[in-house]
Image 1 (cartoon, rainbow, N blue to C red):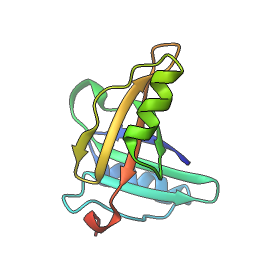
Image 2 (image 1 turned 180 degrees about the vertical axis):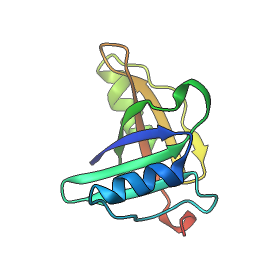
Image 3 (image 1 turned 60 degrees about the horizontal axis):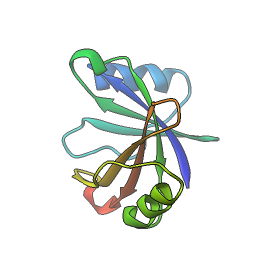
Image 4 (image 1 turned 135 degrees about the vertical axis):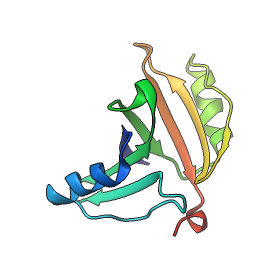
Length: 115
């Protein structure tokens, strides 16, 4: 499982340039351009297009390599209720609140949807 912070931004291009200037490189980009992955030595930063109050927010996400239904079963067995699996432009995603009520995103990627 990979850990990936997601940085929401109202200007994905400017945010990408900023993190490139810090030394990250641009990796996979969604076809519409609203999602940019920036691999680093110790992980990856994702930049996600957003408007409104989400702009400037960071979220913790995990890339999983197994069906989200399997992860959901383990979460339920441990006493946590995940949200439904959602069909996304990159594959599938599911969110669940941690014990402090903070949302965590779980993603199962279909890399052929990327440019």
